[in-house]
Image (cartoon, rainbow, N blue to C red):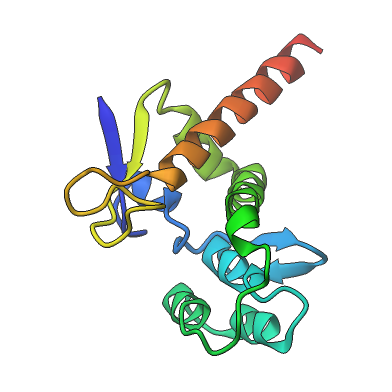
Length: 153
């Protein structure tokens, strides 16, 4: 069975969305959502990154990150998957209630059902890369290993 998620209010899998209100502490500061962190990293080290961190909603953070107000960091295309993995990993490390939901998905395929996103989601026709789903499955495998290691230790 494939598990689809998209909006953060869908239970129980909407919490897999980067818009879910599960903050993370990364790079020495608190980020309200992983979306805030991800969008800000496009402009790491600039005042734009700080402004993104401070907005009240993940939608505002996404809009700012996509606005082309400032040029993206030169290595963004090479770094974006790593940045996403770092954020998602931290989110599920910090929040045991959603970690439990992620681990409960077993080996099921996780798909971000984002009709307008052919990179992070599956796109309108299902042909998208689903990179966020793949990232979540990678985090799930890592968490499962660490839980297994802890049980053996």
